[in-house]
Structure formats: C-alpha cells, structure tokens
Image 1 (cartoon, helix red, strand yellow):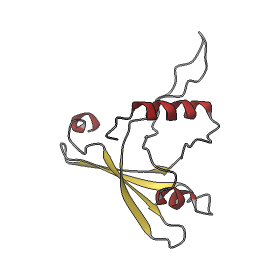
Image 2 (cartoon, one colour):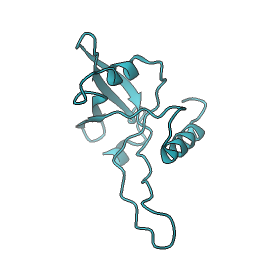
Image 3 (tube, helix red, strand yellow):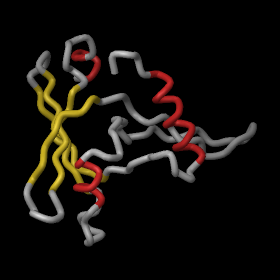
Length: 129
C-alpha cells in the first residue's frame, strides 16, 4: 500500500490520536510519515550479525506542540506515550490502524544511534517541509 500510494499527494499523511492526560479527551492530528527508522546495527566489525528490520515509524514534531504533553503527561506507565495511528491509502482503498508508543528524540537525547538518525532526518528535509 505504501509503494502504491507513494506518488499521491497526501499519501504520506497519517493521523495520530493521543489522550489529553488532564481531561481524558481524545486528540487527533495529521502528521507526515517520514519513513521507517533505519535498522540499529547489532554489532560492528566483520562478525557482525545482520540488523533486524525496524518497525519504528518516523515523524517530526516541535517539542512545544500539544501532542508531546498529551503523550508524555500520563502518570500511569501503561498509558505513557501511547497513541494510535490511522493511515488511509486512497489508491488501494485500504485503512491501517497501528497502536504503539511514541518516542520523542530531542536535542538532549543520549542514545548515539537515535541522535545520528535525528540529524540524518533533519538533513533530508526540503525547504517545503
């Protein structure tokens, strides 16, 4: 579905829903899917195992946006960073719902791999993004 809809304007728009921790009301917004996170290398060197495919989806947001507080403001570990994503593919008339956790990678990130991926993503953005 992703490949078939790649060239359709808006084919990379997805809706992400979170729950406001103060009011328990749902919040939904449209974001741009930026691809899947590159596989994290298991080891370096000639005997390195092949890295596993990543299922982490990349999007970009401003840390000041309400979605950050809505996703990370929950006191229960069971609901912290929880979201649901809905993706409609008009070319194939398919809809996918994906539930998972959001991970925000900001300037204070300590994971070297995620820092490298963040810088790479920002470097790939066009002026229109």
